[in-house]
Image (cartoon, rainbow, N blue to C red; front, top):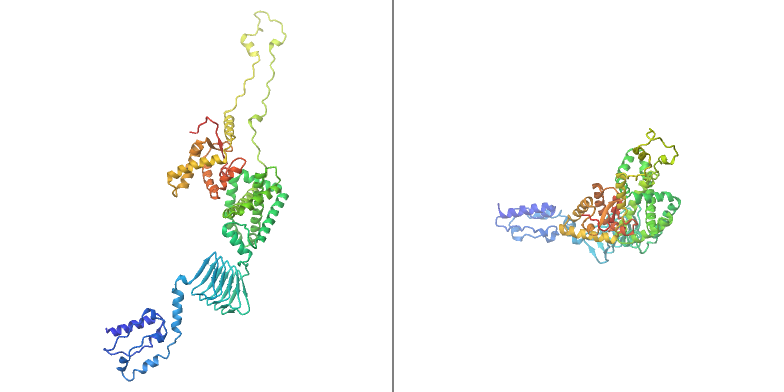
Length: 567
């Protein structure tokens, strides 16, 4: 095929693929002669350019064409639309442009100045968007305010926030507010529709929600000091007053929840965990039955809220009595525990984790106390308190009874063996049953002096160093440490660090350590560690010197007397 024809066909195919058919057919359709110059093939960067920029064929080949042919180009050039090329150019720019043309900020502000132009989109997540210049794309803000006093050629969207359109605002597309509001001042122009789905809260830069986010939640704490946060503190003080009133009106219920948390921590955590997993299933089942929809939408949420509130009051009372003593009134203990909790809530990252933990523990202990019998269990009678044995009848020796002297050789004469049997015998010492003796030995082992915080931490540090050297601090460090501790607790009652300081892990009830107990204690150590070590710090403030893992597993660490070896 002639190179001229090849070039012409390639140009037509390229033009049709780029939807520039009118501009392609504007060329001369007459076949050039064999000696005509080849038609130059348009470059890729020239696609979408204006018709005036297209290459013009030389005049010499046109002169060699038949007289009737020159009329064809003038007729075909008339229907060319000059607006087709800019449309394609805009399409290519919006879809294939670089990400550098967008202006995006996360947990910050996005600002477009009066003389600035953003070719792409202006987006802010958890932050405000302010457009005083021009945005050729869309302007979107999520969890933040949105202020437009410039030009947005696309759509303006706000999710959970306030959309403010100033007097110089011009939005060519739609204005959408999801869970928010649209405030439009006179002079603002909206080319599309204004959609406002629900009225939300104002989380602008000077709002309460924005201040709470920037000074509190973003730093991982539910409470903070900052502007516009007086309402938050007032709300928490009202909650503390409600907790104190509950403790004043229902001291028995508060005490029962506190005792449940102290005596049965493992069952309490397990109950809360199972209930949290089962609540969504219960909600769905109630909704499926149609009749239970009011219960699912009203009774169930109110029940959960009441359990959380009452349980948090019990947790605060437990903390207050741990500091001020058991004799403190529950209402005063609630106030003391609430003050301590408020101080801890201000600590970054620890505060939010502790707030969630208190809510979960309060919910768990309230449910556990609700479904637990209120009758206190009978305490076992110690061996020393057993009823005294029946007193045997008194045997009076025959020597004390005046009898006539028997005749020699008579049958009434007593044999030496009978006389010895008739003589009173001293009472023999009561033999202690072996079962009672063994249980007494176990209880006495649990009653040994408790190991303190610093001694246990030094022993733990020795174990950590040994396992760290063995595993080279790889990803297997924590699992190996847990297995190491569980196995040695079961076999020897202590780890290597505990053996050095004569420490032993025993059960509070004096029973033998079982595999279930040591496994539960090893897993509970992760809970004590992941909560910023608060479970281990609890050893220093607890009266029984028990950490969270000790309370969950029902164990205690004691110090053995000198001379007793664990090896």
